[in-house]
Length: 212
Image (cartoon, rainbow, N blue to C red; front, top):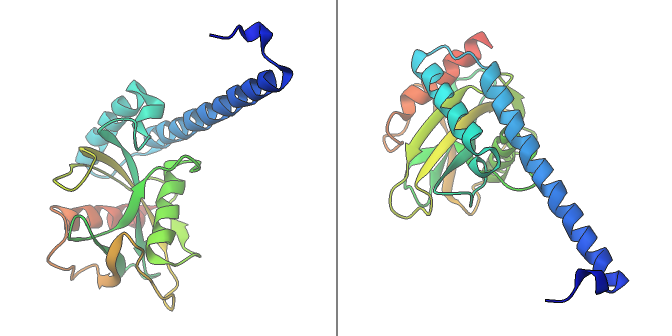
């Protein structure tokens, strides 16, 4: 192995730059995890089951803060979802997931550039529905849903964190490459092929919004 003391100035500069970049990435990941921990601690859910799950989320993230939010940090990791509604909250925008073959809210994995899981949720929503000017509502976390994944997924479990946004009534939604379709559905008349307990999850989000 070459003696580091005998590196050329150019090589030493490159090594310094590489180390500085790695430090910035690590600091960004740590700040993103800290933001989620703060949001979880600040949230007082209406439902007792959500309160108990929040405590489990805190244990999961605190055990390995950066890895818990990394897509490749392990078979279980945090994801971000966004429930997009019409301004009167009577309709919700759902996408038909290619892998899951069901209608579900918008959302996905945390990416390195995301500043927070809330940013993940909004970015994924914009990408998956093609509406750029979504307006966040609710003030923070509105829902937690930990679910196991079946065949066709490389992950084992998603610790999903739900947020919400409002879309303009006249905005035209366009499906992304990850979905076969995207469409508005009445919150009181959801399609049959949604994930188990999805209707209860949606009702919980709406209940949280009613007191936000």
